[in-house]
Length: 225
Image 1: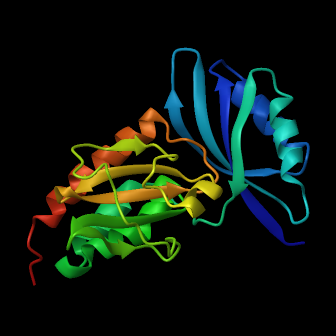
Image 2: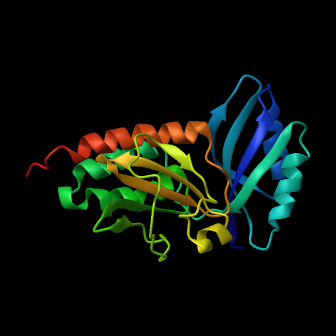
C-alpha cells in the first residue's frame, strides 16, 4: 500500500514523557514518525516539526485528533510533506553554495532554501529599473510578479506582514506567510513564502538571519578554479 507524508507543527508541554505519549497516540492511527525537529523551546513548552507517514487515504484530521488527545499538545498546522528528509540541512546548503560557480550561487540558494527552511518557495528580489526585479526563484516560486516591496532595503531577517498592500492577492488567498533577509547587500533579499502557514517562529527567523549572514560572506568570495 502506498503512503503519504505530512508535516505537523505541534506545541507540547516540555515535560518528561510527553513526546513518547505523542508518538504512541500517532502510532495508534497508523502514523510512523519519520523525523522530528525542535523549532523552538521555552521554559515550559516546545514547538516541534514532526514528519509522519500514513497509508494513502488517511485523513489529516485523524492525525490532529490523535495528537491533541495527548494532554498539553496542540497542533498548530498540518500540510503535505514532499521534501527529502536529511540531517544537517544548513551545513549542506552552505557547502552547495560555496561549491557552485559564482554566477549560480543565488540560484542554488533559492533551489535549496525551501527544504532547509521548510517553506513552499523562495526567490531573490531587489530594486532596480524603477521597479522590483525578481532575480532568482525556486521551481515552486509563484509566477505573479511583484510591483512594489516597501520593506526594501532590509537590514536583518524578519517576518513580513502577509496582509500588506504590496502582497499580491493570490498570495493572500493562499494564506501565504512571508519572511525575508538580506543577501549580499541590504538592497537584495531572499524572500520566503509558506503557503497556508504557519507563522514563522522567532527561532526560524533567527536561523534565517544566521544563514543569510553566512551566504552574504560566501557571495563575497571569488570562486577559485
